[in-house]
Length: 341
Image (cartoon, rainbow, N blue to C red):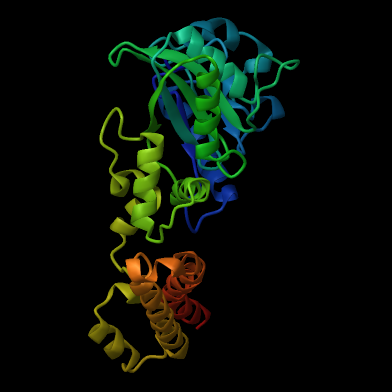
């Protein structure tokens, strides 16, 4: 009941995740909106990359006034829906559909009032308090609300482009404002799914900030969960929340690198052109880099080699990175060759 809404199906975005273009998502949104309006006789608006009018690109502008304002809004010619009737349907309201980049719904928990949380939201969201008082963070929407069931407030944000304003930047900026107001931050909450890159970018930020030495992806994810307090309201299971992990889990063919070594060797020796020399070279290179990483890790962190730790911190990551990149090339080469043929 706290979240802005204008219909039973409020918004249905199409988001390119992998092997699909934004243009294809726009086509999906148009087809979906047209069919929804035709079959259910409800008003449907287009937003984001699918919008036909510049004024309808931003979701908040379409949703302004919410469900309660729809009867008056639908009567105005400038707010005629893109599909469906310009009449109010009480049982449904209206639906917005469109295409956009991956949006991260991210809430920061505060022990304070709704009003104080909203004050911070106004400080950080791009819209700010209006045209004369813009906020600090680009491509960020935000409001403050109170969760009665948790007895705490939240600054609820939407990160419209996490490349422009990363996850950790939102958290750190809200923590800064909260500290100035003497308000405790008690973790945060991700709503829905998140791209792996957003988590790894946050990990790199805290690794650099705290001068940490972490190589493994799993440990980097764990660091972010800890630093942002993502498990403060409910358990955070990366395999269920990071979109790339979910996509990988659904794939039937996990690729060459998922095969046992014996099966990979037999695949190379089979009567087919792929996998071939490129995949074998990548595998050999990955093993060579892995050996370099192994030698460094056997020295790092031991008391007798303590004076070498700063050097090892610089030498090991390039080996580890090369290992990961070359492992990915084992399958990439095979797929590229098969696609060409």
